[in-house]
Structures are given as C-alpha cells and as structure tokens.
Amino acid sequence: MKSETGQKTAADLNDRDEPIYQALLTAIVEHQLPPGSKLPEEALSDVFGVSRTGIRKVLQRLAAVQMITLSPRRGAQVATPGVDEARDIFATRSLLECANLPAVLSHVQAPHLAALGVLIEEEQQAHDQHDGAAAIRLSAAFHIQLQAISGNEVLTDMVTRLTQRSSLVIAAYGAPWQRGCRCDHHDRLVDLLRQKDLPALTAALQHHFEHIVASLHFERSGETLPDFTRLFAGNKGAAS
Figure 1 (cartoon, one colour):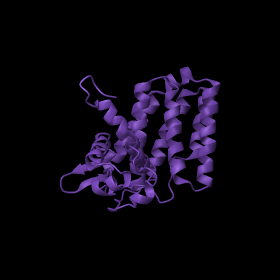
Figure 2 (cartoon, helix red, strand yellow):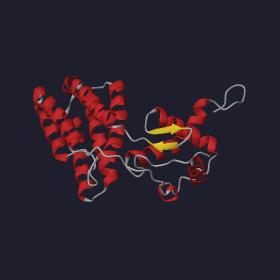
Figure 3 (spheres, one colour):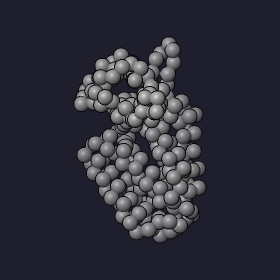
C-alpha cells in the first residue's frame, strides 16, 4: 500500500518483512537457533533473498522483543537470558497467569476444556515422537489458550511474549531432552479447571512453574553459526 505521495507506508514495509520475522522467531522459539547463535546480516540476506537493510529491520524488531541482542562489536545473536533474568521470566509468568485464573474460571465453558484437551493430546504425541519443535509450540499454546479464556487480550499478549522468552531460557539452561512442559501437569490443570477449584488450580500452576525452574541447569551455551540454508530453505524471496 502507498500513501497519497506515492511512498510506501510503514505498514507495507512491515508486511514485506513479516514472513522473515516469523521464520526467524519460530526458529528461535523452537530451538533451531539456540541462544548465542550468530545472525550475520550477509548470510541471512543471501538465504532470504533480500537486502541487508531489510534483514537489519527484522533484526531490530527481534531485538525490540528481547529475542536477540544487537551490538556494534558482536553483531546480532540469539539472546541468552542471564540467570536472574531467567528466574524473573518464570516468576513474572507465575504472577500474571495465576492472578488471571479467577477471570479464566468465570469464563470457562465446555468447548474451552475440549480445546485444551486436544492440545494436551497433541503435545503428548509430539513427546512420544521426539518432535521437540512441536512439543515446544504446543506447550506454549496451552498456556496462551488457557489465559485467553479470560478474554483479556492485553494479558494474553503479554503471556505470549513471555512464553517466547521462556523458550530461550529452556534452550539455554534446560536438559537436552527437555521440551516444553510436563503434559501430566497440564492434565492436572485442566482437571482442576473443570472442577472450578481456584485455590487448588492456583497452587498447581505455581508448582508447575517452580518445577520448570528447578529442572533448569544454569550453564551458558556457546556461540554457534547455524546452517541458515537448511533452516530457511524455501523462504528466499518471501518478502518480494
């Protein structure tokens, strides 16, 4: 879309960048690009078939949501949350998601419970098939969909962003086999949601987050240069 002066609008430019932004964000969240991975503009420009200026805009967007870091000396890298930041991310999630449970309970209907049940089944399938990317995606979707029941779009958006940053924490400090959350924990949350037992539901969700943090090993990952051609095959020219 162009303005009356014939210039491309900011929205139009963002639309062109969106496929690249989403491809990189998904690769980061699903641990295909682990913390510390270098993101050189030239390599990404070649893979996506766009200018380095276009790649730079996407990297700036990712930096704005704290998924990558940008520095003049080191360039762009997938963010590695520090130990305090990692703990704070999950503490904040616990505060927000638990505080919103009364609103979730007041809005929950049978179709909501059924949809959460489907997510749990798909998540368990992903674990059984050792599909780490799907397990991460479905685990995050469970928490987002649970909070979305309340109808609070602002909080749901905040939880969405925090689940993305949680994935960075798990990628940096989780055991190699750790993918997403425990499915049995999610089953328990749905059971308590069905019973509308707020105190037990709140305690179970708090325990869920405490369990995740307790399972983390706070050791830093090293820098890597991923195989961008393999990761983003088929994306070249996506922004044209």
